Image (cartoon, rainbow, N blue to C red):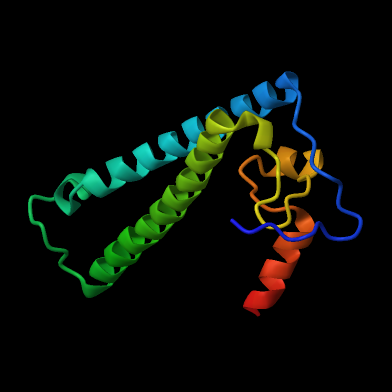
Amino acid sequence: MTMTKPPAGAKAFKPMNKKNLAYFEKRLLEERKRVLKELGHFDEAFGNTLQSSDGDLSSHSFHMADQGTDAMEREKAFLFASKEGRFLWHVDEALRRLYRKPEAFGQCHSCGGEIMYERLDALPHARYCIECKTKEEDGKR
């Protein structure tokens, strides 16, 4: 991780106090619990066969429109599950950062400046200050 000079207006980094660290740990653990619960719902949806979902003994729909709807619903559920899985990875990474180096939690991975409390409160898994995240997003366009 290479640190550049903090952007103008960015605060110099100072470690968080224990109260704030405990608050963000709680927030991250709550998010993790919520996501795992959501993924459990997706697991149940993927575990259901076509037979069990409509009570029919045949594993094939009789109408092509039903087959298309079933396929679309499975694809949509998979898309949501993969998005939640990526979010879970980010939350787990934030917890690892918090546990491994609590004195550096809330420090921008790009410039080394402070990630504002308000940003972390909204996105407790944030790795970049708003200025660096904006630059990163502008570079992708």
